[in-house]
Image (cartoon, rainbow, N blue to C red; front, side, top):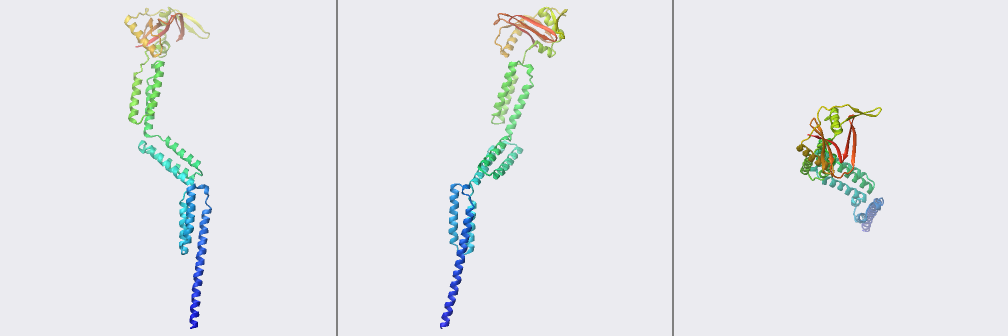
Amino acid sequence: MKKKILAVVLAMLIVFSFVGCADIALAQYKDFTKRELDAYFAVLDKDDYNEDSWAEIERIVADGSMAINMTTDKERADFALNEAKQAIYAVLTELAKYKAAAKIALENYAENKGQENYGEENWATIQDIVMGGKITINAATDNDGVDLALNAAKQEIDAVWTELAEYKVAAKETLGIYAENKGQENYTRYYWDFMTVSVTNYGKNIDAAADKAEVDLLFEEAKSMIDQRPQKDFWELKEAYDKGWLSREDLMHITYFNTGEVVEVIENPYRLIKIDFTPEMEAPALDSSTKSELEDTFRSYLHQMDYRLSTAIADKFLGEYNGCYVVQFRFTNGWSEPMVRTLFIGGIRFQWTGVGVFGVMVYKK
């Protein structure tokens, strides 16, 4: 009987011994697991996180340690450790959050441009810019680098022309060509300058247009303005000669009818020689109706040239040549002293003298 009791006692001691060893081994494993969690936490840099994120990580570590303590076997301890690590990893650093926000901002910036405003090729270009911008943002090592990458991508997107922008550029280029084809030589300087400024201003309005319809409207308005600009009616004597409207023989007649002589300019050495010249026609006369019409037209010309003296008269008619009236005009007010104008055209001297003499002008019919 005593042997049986002794055997039972020995068995119980052996069982308790095994249980005690198992408890000690699990406790040690838990301690080791918590130290591993602490080590994982220790390598983190507090400066990489904002205050709320760091507090969240500290809470995860504390909860993880508590969860490890409450486990009943090694497998559950490992599970609690891994859960804590994953939770810590899920808390983004301040830089990571900044990058994520920047990438979202870049996507939104591109989307707000509106795919419908771009051609297929240009929209694909914008998508490539967004992708490249995200890669550059990911590679940034600080917030400033993120900002640089974001702004650079935005600028690239802005540089991609919308379909409307391309339409505007084409309209402005066409308008400029339309104006140039009118020929500066066909307008007075005053009106050509006015028209040039007007075309520039219409270009600015086209830039501000909201859609193609508005671009078209402004374009047609500008063309109408150009078409309505009065073309040049009167030309300087030299302009008419350079255009081939007047010959050298015509010039000799014009100066003879004006001064009664023809003086030729000789170079090397420079000298003036009076030419023995007999006109092929009599001194021309101008009927009153044509004279009045020329004076009215000339006054309009003066207005175009921004002259304020509107009392000019056709002082002398010097002939009609190949559809060109050649007239000396004179102002009847605002002048008190005689004036002399001298110039040389086609090797012939031209000289006008008198009170208020404007000079000889050519009217192209």
